[in-house]
Image 1 (cartoon, helix red, strand yellow):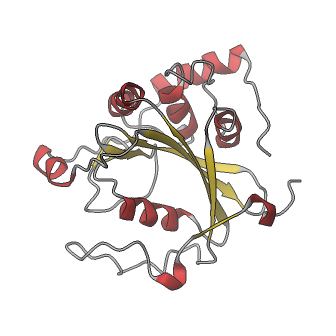
Image 2 (cartoon, rainbow, N blue to C red):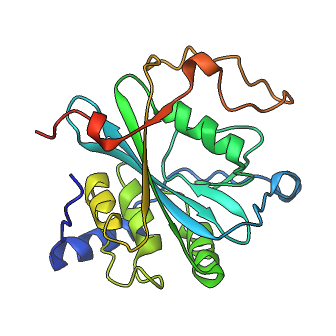
Length: 228
């Protein structure tokens, strides 16, 4: 499942072209809102690739990046997740606290999807470059989430050979080859319509991860269904 898949040069060139030409809707939170919710963990800098996997087909469906550097954000290209305490600027969500990460995971882990998070420690300089790249990338169009995330990673220190790819599973398989990567897999039996989460987090309410009965849980790879 985590075997290295190499993209051909022609695909890389096409992906780069698509990334530059396909822009999404621009959302740009005001300065005062972003400043209110900025969050820095103060811990070891890291980069995490988030991949949504279809439980029926075992195919990748979406990619995002959690960047823990000078501040902690999630770069969620053309994603549907949002929260008033995590203001967005062109697919970069600020104020990405651990509670927000739990909320983000539970939003995506459904009865039909599982979430794979691959995290690796990086230098402060590498995290800072990744953060600036994500901020500068711009709003991403449909079906280009992995082109965007892999473009941010491509060429970073420690990611020099990381290819720009179109498909989430290919990015996940390449990230698995990065030395020191730690992988967590989250599953949840909650419904696809997010009815378990609606109304749980009104603006101004205290942020909790998710109601316990609907918490996405991490599982070992041995519990996953065999790959077709």
